[in-house]
Image 1 (cartoon, rainbow, N blue to C red):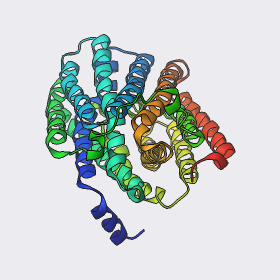
Image 2: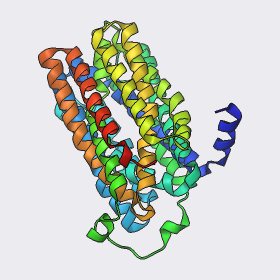
Image 3: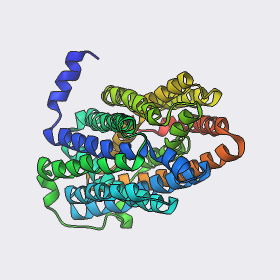
Image 4: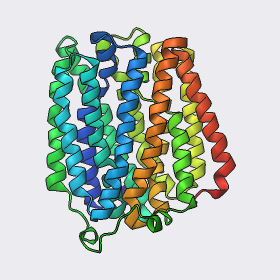
Length: 398
């Protein structure tokens, strides 16, 4: 794909999708300023174990995914997406001060859960809004663009965290306070910069989870749900990437740079792979993503030297770029337009349960058998997902 072709496609993407991408970017700056430091804050400042980190992260991320069931269904019932997305982003911004005042893991858990409830409330309506705004022929590119902008925020956030930690002598709490600012800006941009399509302001309201509606979610959709759940089992919380980097002796203030590296690779790769998904077999792209994640797990398992960790983290970023926008596109392609919010919600419910199991297991293995065992287990789950993908690829969409 040439630079000219990419530029031409970008010009065709509606302004509302660009705005949603920038909203995601600002909120990710806010969130990643906190999340890139939180595992070290919990272990170092609050005395938590790796298992505790896994439980907190697993509960938090699974909560976000599970809440999407209700927000997605509600957005389908109301025929409106923006209001729910706005509430979710506002809740995410308002929880940031709790991290700054936390003096126990219980307060951190409360803050993480509330923050992820906000993410869950906004996630499915926002993804459905992207699908509503994007022309079908540009849907993969639109999701890739939003994911790329989101991920730009995910590497700017840790980069800001590194700079502020160096400036303020590893003062975690001051960095957490600064994280409030981009969160508030994200809410303001969504409020004033995004208009919802008119077709979602009209029509008779029906219950999206009635039996006759759920039957319309057909076999290809449930195939996507199943593969997504197994895939999530293979991809536990990224908090363990931070802890792996810290094991290698990297100074605390510089550890978030591993997340900068991962998200930089993710941001650069998400749009091209999203665009590629409009032209290539989704099954083949998913298989490629799983192979790359196996490679990342194996690299991270063999050594905690900073160069090896950096290589593993970069591979992790490539797999995210290949798969995250692709899964969202596959849900949109296999679900009826009036049930997209519900479809994203059910998809994320299954992924949320898998994320909780994966993160708790990762923390348990880390404490009992060492860090390497966590990443080897991830590679095994990847292999299971890859076998399942190969077995059922004849039933997959496209």
